[in-house]
Image 1 (cartoon, rainbow, N blue to C red):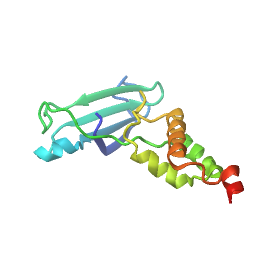
Image 2: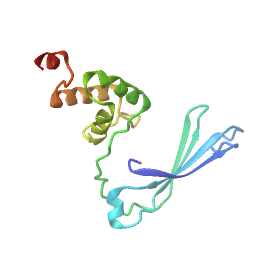
Image 3: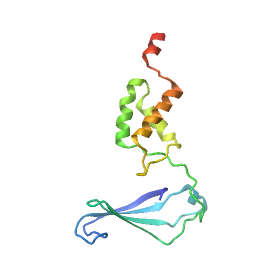
Image 4: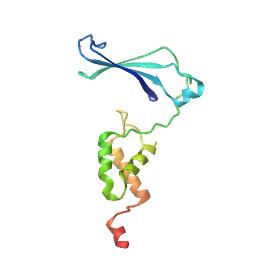
Length: 148
């Protein structure tokens, strides 16, 4: 389910996972792979039932195959930027890199692999910032100010 988009979300009072009377969320996801789009409309739809109380998931998929057939998805996925990462990026302004530049550069890096949870981790963001500093250099460092 790497290239999916949520197109429908419903909250139910009756759980379809365990049969209890508590809130459950149903999401329907459709395939949005660029590889499938080249071959036509993809008919694959997933139903994801989620019960937050016990963190239980149930995933169902229809019997329609992908429009791309047996080909794998060749799309490069951009990493997600979470709130803790944005907070870390916002504190980096004192080293001379505007937070917006860091965030845009991070979104462009397709070499960062998502972790098991599907998002990049804070340590991966910190490594990406070290790479930016190596490429662009420290712009507002004490040594740069002394050279002026």
